[in-house]
Image (cartoon, rainbow, N blue to C red):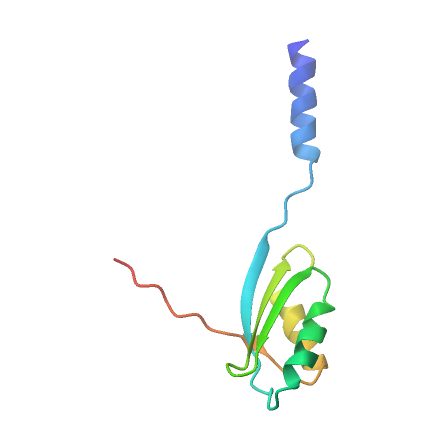
Amino acid sequence: MKKTMITTILFLLFSMPTLAVEKTVTLSVPGMTCVTCPITVKAALGQVAGVSAVDVRFEERDATVTFDDEKTSVKQLTEATTNAGYPSTLKATAPKNQS
């Protein structure tokens, strides 16, 4: 009885799909030169499968994107903005101070 139960539990654990990790990245989009450009950038990023949130800031020329890393990647995000006419790159983050 215990052997069957253990086998069933192990089977269920190993047959479960892995949980995707939600990631948030900021893309530098220097080609946004007018206040309507963010509309196009947001629309392009919003059409990428797995994207759950997009915040485009014209003044900073960047876009913060939250996405499911099982469904898309940074490369696909930058390709989406490039295909919309606004090439982008992953924005560098400031290194954290180590105490």
